[in-house]
Amino acid sequence: MSNYMGYDRRQNERKNYNLKSNPIGLKLKADDEVREIYKVHDVSISGMRISLAEVKLKTEQTLTLLVSERVYSLSVNAVVRWHAPGLESGIYEHGIEFDYGDMDLNLLLFMYLRENMNKL
Image 1 (cartoon, rainbow, N blue to C red):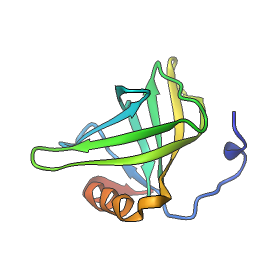
Image 2: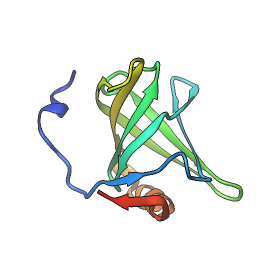
Image 3: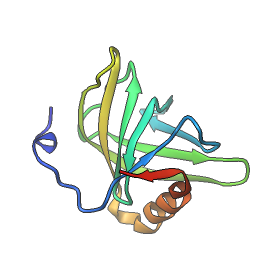
């Protein structure tokens, strides 16, 4: 496990995101494989904490977050900063940080998802 789990580096407020009651498709692409996101715990303009079923990504691994609905689609590059076993068997939590090279895309993603968020 990385040192990132040892202390809270968050610079931006996190918000909960309800994946199940949402019409927006949210997936992750890593190593040329598209994977379903099991749960989004929280999201901000700089990153997300997610859970994946049966998949443990590597710290510092690059990935692409894929967001789509009927009309629009968006992709944001990110890096895995930490991972840990989830509370459920076979579930792994991951902290991902969005690429700071394109803050406009990060902000657009956050604005796109914010209608379905609840403040922590």
